[in-house]
Image (cartoon, rainbow, N blue to C red):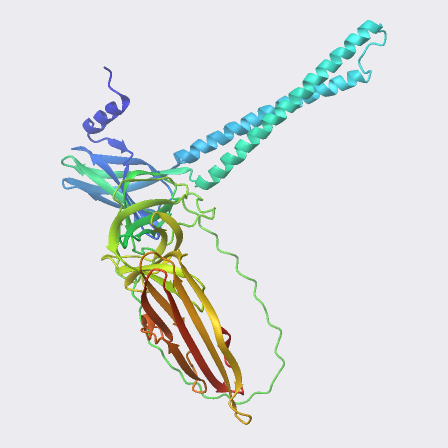
Length: 531
């Protein structure tokens, strides 16, 4: 059996000492930050190797971020980088779409040629039909044959034009589809970079190189599923990743970091704040101000373009919200394949279950419906703010933004409870003054909240009310509740009171609230329209 080309190349690479060994150094790991990524590659080194050449690298990474490390027994010397231009795109998917687009354009050009040739035939037959080029001495039989030939030829020419136009429409549809897909994956990268490393290898080992690329990022995402029968929440941590760096990542180990390498690492340097006194100047005779002389604007500085023009589109990588804590890394459990086309993919990271307390929350003055809520202790670890999808008993109920900094607990809402009815009735409303000569106005309101449960099992109810709170000494507020609220300041929010009750099946609860607001007649009072 004859050895393959790859095997022959490997044998030559490991046996010919003192010669350069060409290697592609596949990507072994990628660490995603906010807006950038660190790409790590690994290449094997044979004993006695003097020079290692790594090819096929994208030319758009910052060469200053290049870092090379060697395993024990391998020393690294001079490093030389070289960029090489090529006709095809660096990305395989982009090159494939460009070739497909070119083939469709060639097919369209051939069809246009077919139409033009059919038009020439049609025009020629039209001239014959008009008598041009037809012998004048024709008997009736010959004339009929000529007319039939012209008619048949014209029909064939027109039919061919129509068929070709149908084919053109189909090709134009395919062209637009390929162009749209190409715009999504287009990076514009046409150059590749090779790195030549001087090596002194006393034994077999490896060389790891890493560099940073832009236009890549990630953001956290979550999925919470409430099981109302067991009162548990299954919380799944996920990550949304995307990149358009100019190179595809296939089957790589991936880590997600909350670090911000783009921010300046320098600490601020305080400078003295000097105060200078200037004595008053003697008054001067006022003179007309001369016309201002405007200097010509300096020419704009040339824009330096490095690597490939890959930032010509509107791609924005996923943005990670900073939390103000120490940097944290999350490891993706499985290897990841991520094309350089800007498309976002979601990666599962971990799943856990927590016991939760279910309640039905009602805020009658704001909304006339009830919402199912679940509250649990936040699991240990770092939880970043992000979008969360909500499911209740297997059904999707919506999505919201989970702000992990707003509370030290895991508190989520899982949609409306259609088996709890809420009504608000205005019992009394009066406005006026305390007396004919009084300088103060007064408004009295009284409402009755009626909450009815049609559940077949008991449910925990939480009713919240935003009471009027005076922000001025001139405004006086008196409150009247029946029954009295058991919560005076819900979640330490001033003026938000609450009632907690376990509702039996088919039970109805009524709450009476009343406010008397006194204020000066002169002036205005804001916020009165809420009551």
